[in-house]
Image (cartoon, rainbow, N blue to C red; front, side):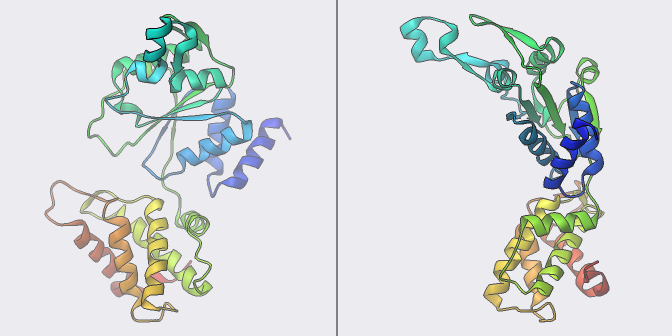
Length: 304
């Protein structure tokens, strides 16, 4: 067994159902490549990176890509108070996330990569191509060998985004990450939303229902984008509290479906995005999904 295989096997213990993506991503970063992860929110992109960097013992530096991410915010700046006292010097320079990742040999993770301004991306291009950058009044900063640039994009969101240039694409590998299957998502919800005080059979049913209705939002004709598994996690946690308020102890209780619907509205209505051509509300769409699941197809509500 190679050392890289051993690393993968240790990392996979912290993940649910992402073996293929983990193997490909680990191979790319181990080969010294920078990479863009393309997929909707809630598809374990940051979880994969946290697991890999934790195993390697290196930092994971998060940056949110947006119009305010200037090169100065990315690279760093001189401390104004110290400049007034001491003038400019390398000692009073405050590292930004790029230099923090380069000096620490970590992963710079830029979320919403295609929302960052072009001049900011050009700064990243230099760091990726040369593995060092020149900072005025500081000098050249070289990256440690484990430094990587990891970017992420949501292919379903075009609001406020820009098309990446060919020079950016040419310097990045790409891995598309989609939603996991229902079984894996039930495993994620069970891991992230435990309810030890709820009857095990009721909890199993609740997790199955939460995952089923959340997955249904991704296929509904009135929605441009549905919810990630994070919605199912929150739905399960909120429903767990509502079950206690209503004193519902089993899934056969006639109040159980209504509890799930109330939790759906709270957990999912802000995570789904209506198609611009329809005149409806998130609550109405969720009601239709609820009726399909609990009234029209009640057999689908059972786990499995």
